[in-house]
Length: 293
Image 1: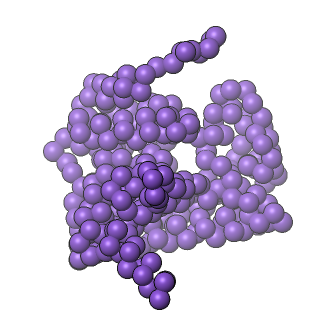
Image 2 (image 1 turned 120 degrees about the vertical axis):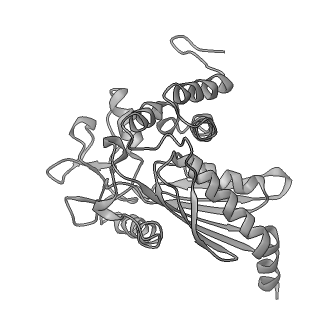
Image 3 (image 1 turned 180 degrees about the vertical axis):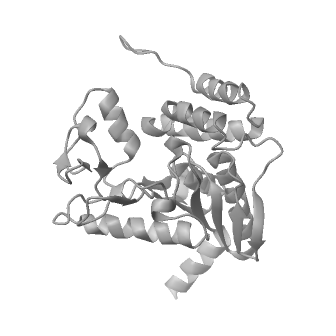
């Protein structure tokens, strides 16, 4: 039941609304469904910074052609072998590319024990945890990483070079249980800073710095995000290191944009890159057997 001043909207209605919004501007229906799946997943898991609140940005990017509407366009496999592949997303909606890459990685994992797919030419792919959940549904361990446009102010720096560069892992467990990790390598996600600003709330300490390079709790004074761990004294260099790891795996490994060359999707600029790794049931069993011996 909705509380005073709040309206509860059924998940299916939100999902349908997202699809209708995208179809109204000529977006490929299947690609729209993938985005709707990703955004509603975020909202139902309480990650409101990456749910329906993001639909306006996707629509803007589609309207100004920063993201392809996907009509007659699908991701393509640039090269592959039994367990790895490089995919070009051809700049369609990120979750549609993500689903393609996930399915490919899982197919390879079922065949060879492990599947690793690197993606270039994509756009914002929603929450990273959505991909780990897909692996869990197939009885696999799945990891997903992506680099993003520059938002992180590196340790001992005043300028933004790396992105929030999230890390995700999904692992199935017994009795229908599971473990899902989905975290930015910055102290928080940019969307959460924006949400605080919209709600008129101050930022927690250790999240952000202003243009002077000083820590700020004022969303209006925000310039960049601190790395996971905050300041150097509190271990922020570890978050910086993790962000750099993701940048290498996603941007450099895929032969695509990285660092300052990664486009800002909010400004209708270029694409980001991903890396997926999946371990099949047979592969996990083999690893456990070796560990026992």
